[in-house]
Length: 406
Figure: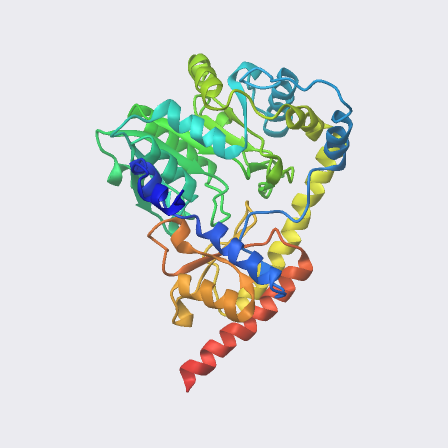
């Protein structure tokens, strides 16, 4: 049978499948992998992929689970013991009370975002999102036939939404506001007073508040030594998405959670049941150990290590004449301006990969406002890789200057 003939007779794809935008960070990662397979050493600073794995107590628990015991589905909302541990973590880490019944365990933070959008967005609903911000949020809104309203932000607002910006872009169709703090790609947190004002504005205008706190526990402590607060201490009815990937180093384990208002628990339970039935049972059981004193101490040491890596990157970029508009104080990203090189951000990343063998992510992944001017660097890599990557970029940027001078 002629297989090419079969391909030509396939029915059309759903509109959403053709409309979804590529995630350039992943494509650059694939290119880097191919280069490495060909024997080229690439410094990978493009993905939010820590160079550490889950804490040892979690890995030990996972190994022990594979002893032949039955590992059946959990309930759709997740393992009760894990939900209780997350509730206790909110109480001790962020001084906020969250009933375990409001917590749903998901297959990664992305699935938590999926549930949040499915719960709140109808066809034609407008959702306000900071530009730049995590690209998946936009694609999820569009997949549910919502309308993304990109709100251009700047260094002046720490690349976050403000109530003033909401007022400019609000319409009668606005259904939700999505906030990511600390931000991906800028690594900045939204000031608590600003977050409160944004939530107040949205609530007063009868809109949902969806807050992605995936990087919250990596954030710097406040000047008084306290943790950056969860939005739940500011707005108890906000929908919160989070993940085990970053603070606990469990990217490939694919486990996250969502916290929803009490009145929506049954609805989100039904959505979770139909979308993915339940998260991976062994990973849920092992993840209980994330909240042991040993695992928490390991995760906190890693947070402090990232601060040292941040200093290497910020100082290094400054020396290259590539300014970071707002110093990151949360997620492990530096978002720097490449305008002075005479290249667009995409050109800079493509040439840095091919000529300097350094993988970075162009601003086009994160929206239009900084698409051509900014590049994201992930400093979740080792200190040695960061120093080597910066040395390579120094030579690359120097070569650009030399060519312009000719």
